[in-house]
Image (cartoon, rainbow, N blue to C red; front, side, top):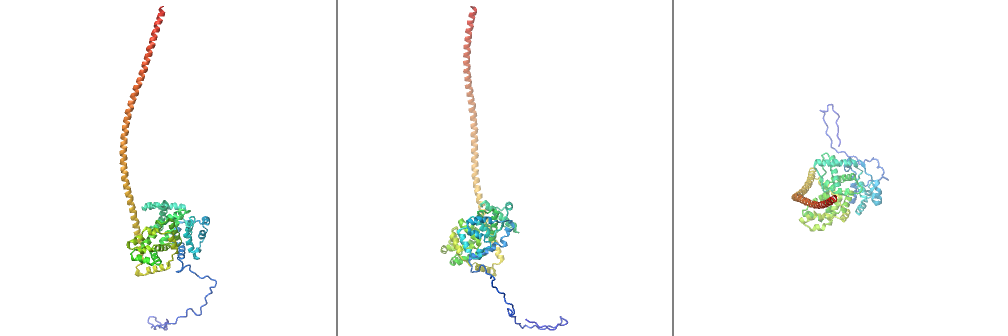
Length: 494
């Protein structure tokens, strides 16, 4: 647009203005004709993204996890409470002898297996089983645990955590093993120390950590400080995950795996989002075989929480025939029964690794839904929904604790009544025994006096007998003396 200017007047206020021309000006040619040519790119590497929408799901998940583990948010707690570097090389000597393949993966600090699209090979190695001696090193390397709290500081934190527990009257479940309970106390204490609001970790994170901890404690060769560093990683992993997005991806994965299954479930009015929540909350504390859970945990370490999306899709595909036959409450009871979840096996995990899901597509759909004002998923509503779910879970936990306390109280009262009856019986028995003892003592005293009297009489008889013998001897001697006197008198008279 061009503007014509009149000669500048002496008084700008009273000066007349000329009309502005609205005749459009022809834009210049783009690019300019006289622009220099672009430099040649011969011999220079072209940028090639590691994954796209058509990439294998395992590659996408593994790359994302590798980037996530190195992000500042995943290392906040570890950086604050850690000061001692993790020593990997001295332990690798055993790993090389036990499994050269895993030793090379542990030494692959640039994650070359991801960049060369060999993640599926890692999955196959995990399915074969990670050697027990190597698994701790795999976890430390994959989750990028560089340092941990020193032992002296750890014991100091344990004391402070226990002290804070008593002050806040916040007890850890007594059913947990001692090591697990201690680490859970320390973890919650550290979270409160860092958070400005001194709030506890959300219930989903706490329950997930609670389920994972027994597996981490049993990893050979790891001290409690190193286990705590891994706990921080798992806690941050779950805490950073969008729960609503996770539930949506689960439903979409089930739909793509077998659309008839999800359609049938929806027609029967079953809300399976509660099942997805249960997976996050109780999967690792369920009754599934320990070896199966450990394999799932290995894959979560490599591929993150979204591996559970593939697992859920495979699980529903396995049960598709039974699901399509069931209706109404029968279907709901079947899906939420222990039998459904506990049926997960090593074959289910194998099917999960073969399950390809349109992960990026699901995430784009969810973001569009969240950004749409009509859907009502604004930030305030989402925050209130998350807070409501967290409170509902806390209420559920408190109710369970109340029920356990009621059962304990009932047991204590019944035991108290039993002990009271035993005490009364024991007191009566004691009184009877005391009376019997007194009676026996009286009899003993009487018997003792009678025996003493008999002994005295017997002694007197013996003495009397001896006296009679002595008197007879004296009389005999007297007779002999008298006879000798008479003989002596006769001799004297003669």
